[in-house]
Length: 94
Image 1: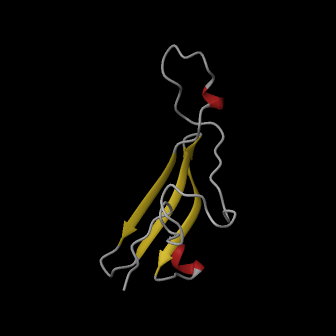
Image 2: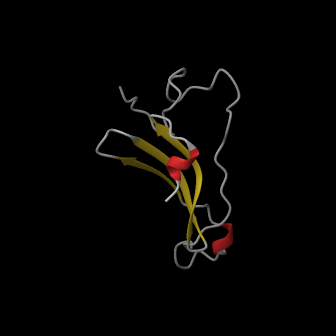
């Protein structure tokens, strides 16, 4: 059975909108972006928040990959990856 979770709802031990009963294990931090602030804003693009993306890849055999990525300097950087069922490191190579 494949568990339906994403990076945004992976912890079912708290209610949405309430404080966590313990400190978070990880937190998202971004610095800069490849896109710019709205025209006429006057702020530099380097101070804009990073564009984070939560991407899910589902394959025909039911394997699912959840990827947390950020676009920066014309590249996609993978920040975190979860596989269900778990994959060995060699399973992620191309």
